[in-house]
Amino acid sequence: DRVVVGGSFDSLAGSPAANLGAVSAQDGDRVAGFAPQVAGRVYALEATTELLYAGGAFGKVDGRSRSKLAAWSLPSGELSRDWRPRAVGGAVRDLELARRGRAIFVAGAFPQMAQGGTTSWRESVTKVDATDGSLARWHTEPGRIGVPQTAWSVAARGRRLHGGFGRGPNFAASFVGVGDDGTRIWRYAVPGNVQTVELSPDGSRLFLGGHFGLGAGDGRACGEDLRGLVSVDPATGEPFCDWIPQLA
Image (cartoon, rainbow, N blue to C red; front, side, top):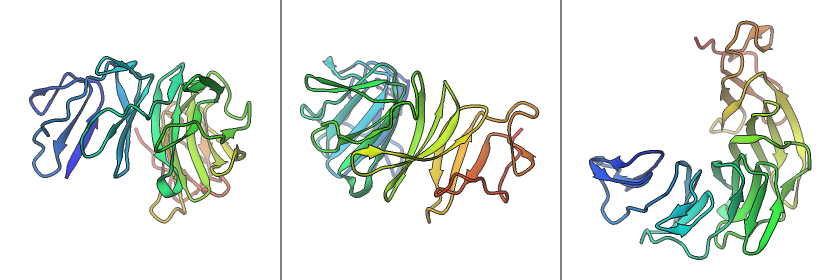
């Protein structure tokens, strides 16, 4: 019944807001009672029936320390005291529920994650418990993503996690998304950031969007110039030749 909106703003639907708020799904009016003070940009939102999650470049929420990640209880909208993983380094850029909704993949520009008194090395992508925020043992193989690097966007389906990366090398990749070891399945290199990834509803096609191929001759697939969009086989990373839009 409501749409949660995050970003970089100081008002929402005509009322003061600090980068996060909610509006009615019916008429767009501001939803009263949910006005957290987020001290920094909100880049990503995800929700279950019990919690709303946010990721971004913020350091505090309502004056309390929250390093790039925070959660609120639903439907009360109260800031969770228990869900407190911390991204150490760069901003969180995307959040994606893992299968069954018991965990959340966190993507961004961070090289480390912390929870409680423990800090663990993670290369731009990690997995945390959806209920208590504890850091899962799942991790990608060292060096497969690299540092410094940004995971701009991720999409999960079944046993796989797909992601778009850039800042160092620019590429899309697919990993095993279950168990402890996030083994890389394939890597598809492009000349610019892959800033968004999305699976088709039936899971048969992975769409990649970004600023790759926007220069003349800057990246090709199937004998055609790339222009910011391409789709690949989620199982192999091979591009589909029937859909290569030419964005201006």
